Image: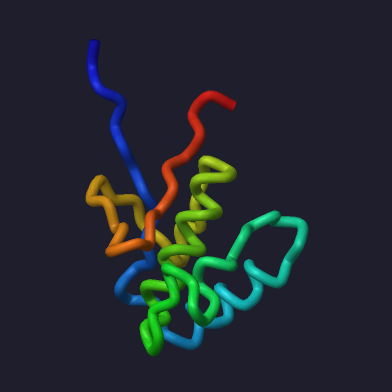
Length: 96
């Protein structure tokens, strides 16, 4: 039996910090998305001070994990786990 492929979504390198910041603010403020952005808040395990790209990667991955789709303008898919320290990037639920 083949092991399932693990895939995460991370921010593209060519997207501006301003665009990524707006994405994070909009996605976390929009209750319709149902994303729990608490991990990127100050004191959270995924709060990376002055690293908007890492925070945006976490939010993009939350969206990908929840909806099994990604925002191609801002993100790209990777097989390399972007988790760092106590900040764990969730995998999509493929059972639902």
